[in-house]
Every structure is written in C-alpha cells, then in structure tokens.
Image (cartoon, rainbow, N blue to C red; front, side):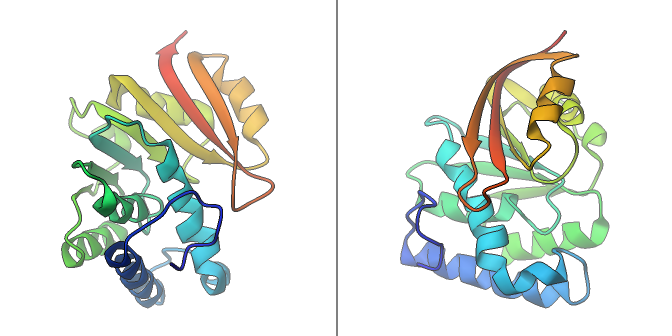
Length: 206
C-alpha cells in the first residue's frame, strides 16, 4: 500500500488502485487548475493523501452520510470516499465546492471511480436544507468560528465535525467558544508535528 505507516487505515488492493488513479488525475488536472500547491505535488502522498486518510479513523460506527465543505481537489472528500469502498456498509458523501472548475474535477473523478459522491457547486449557505450529515469535515477552509456557523445547520442531532487545524488551533478554539458550545476532542496529526485534528460534537450556539 502506498500510504505511509501509522495512518491507521488498512485498504484493499482495489482501494489502493483507486487512490493511485485519483492521484494521477489530481496531478494531471493540477497543471491547468490550482487544485493543490505545485510545491506539494512531489510529496503528494504524505502532504495530501495520507493527511486526508487519517480522518477516516474517526468515522462513527453507524455513520451513513459525510459532508465535506470546500472540497477543492477532493481533499479530504474524495480520499475518504475512496476509502469507504472497504466498509461493510454504505457511506454517502456530499462534496461542496463553489469553484465550477474544481467541481467539474470532483464529478469527473467520482464518475470514473464509481464513488458514492454528490457534488454541489455552490457556497455552503446555498446548500439545500435538511442534509442532516453524520459527519461534516473541512480542510483549510475557514477559522473555527466560521466553520461552526457553516456546519451547525448541516448536522444530524448526533453528528460530529472533523476539522484539521494547524498552529492556530488553540486561538481558534478560544474564539469559537465565545459564541459556541461544543464537546471537543483534540488529536495530534500523524502527518504534521505542528497540526492537529479537532473533533466537535453537540455543537450549539451560545
């Protein structure tokens, strides 16, 4: 398997092949569309694929729906949808990306790899009501207070949020707690010593 050790995700050969094909498409499209920073392409498996894949270990046992906000090039949304191939239950993904060209890329990959993905090419506030996601994620999209505002209307009653964050995580948590109550768990990132993953539940406005 191409993923680095320690990610905590074991995959089948079929899923490994799908991840490899996704990386090929990402590198191809990245020449025309800025999906990921060109300076990170040489280390794409660690900087982007493994960094996204580590979120999968936080998937609740009974979750059936995952909404990824600001999906960009499909990180983490497409990576997680590919990993869901190895689940013994169906997990459906909604990827939200306002950039039309990036949304086209997301749809192309989802179609070619036959992934359980629906793409909305719109801003988060324009999503249809009633999504009720079990999981909401966002990677490098917005500060935590804004993410709480975006994610709260989309969550099922027992839904959780999974937000990778960098060195500003502590400050963002303090800022978010000025307007939001939530249960919080913090996990060190496996791929970056200066990053962590925030898991929020029971989010409610103050």
